[in-house]
Image (cartoon, rainbow over all chains, first blue to last red; front, top):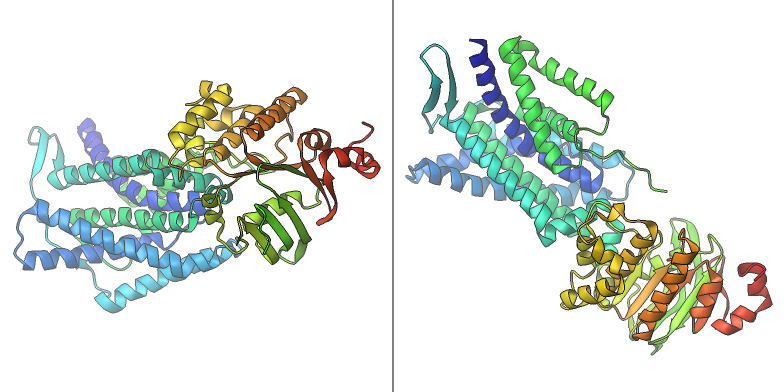
Length: 305
Length: 236
């Protein structure tokens, strides 16, 4: 019996963790390259839930039935729209503060975060929105009483999250842009001297991070079916935790941190008490960071001499 | 307008309100080795960084092949055929030797040809091609920084204290390599604290004191100058 619950929670945790990971990637990339925490990132995720819903509604209105086509089209549109949001936010709120003291862009980020929330409330209302489930079906392992279930949506979430992560990893590790990105992260001044337009690199990092948040936004909306203007906050805190847990600045770390956070949260919820799952998750973070302050895969910060 | 290959004319720059260069004028002709010596804090590194627009020149002109480049964005300078081997090497430690070299040649169509030449010149880099650059020794990192700069096939190579922190034997090797590079026709502007080595190598030299050019002449002249001897060459 317990073994089945354990396995079930493990499945749920990995799915949840994959979503944390998708958003954590945005935090970690921006931190890695600018040393700044982009607190507005989670609101991009929130907006993408609205964007996906609107796009889905329009597509269904146009008579598109196939779930796969619906998802891919929605993903495409939502990703490009959030990418645009990310680009504009960087241009307006962060770039002018590039040489300002570190606190300034942080305040700016919190401001943008509030603006985006209010924007969602003003244009879409404060009520919870939802979409009906359009991908059904569950695969069961085990008998009628003791079993582990994986819904088709969960499978889809895992596949899409995995593909996005693999694609992102490929871009960063094996393309000229990825190389420029890593060079900018390690020594921005030197990257400029070698002819890299680091402003452009930073813009693209925001674009990519935002697009990944859109993937998460659509997946969560499909999975839970409902959302409001406030979903960014909790998700942001969790994803940021995942990024820190994995070692902020590290891409693989963000993904790993997401999975660890998701799994430990689900296991605690399933085996002990679901009301205290967040308490457990964050206690875990605190304890972990006491022993490994730079996170799982992070490198200890070396002061430049 | 000055028609020379590369020249600075009355260039001034500052970090915030702190001025670092005062009306610095100097020139480098094609094929020359020119060195700039000076004490710690004289503004040698600032001078090289000003050429790359960081800090930006607040006054004066930087002419490169007849064009004033003082107001170009930093990332445009590399494309003009000027490469820098910066102070402290500034290689990308988490990237491999191969990637570091690729970063240098990213806008060069000759990158693959030049890579082979550079690996021939620095066999140690070939041995450690797939290794992370941060794991290299100081001397190897300096070779990598020079190799990276050469990857863009520059017409002017700027070097900022390449001998800093290296063992005497490695320093000797380093200067041999610079001589070799110069022999192949490279124009070199070398900033050094190691005045003895630098002046022996250089065709001409400048002495920077408190952000101003105090002296200039051929390498041999400055080596014999009593003031230079006293201030920069110690008891040699």
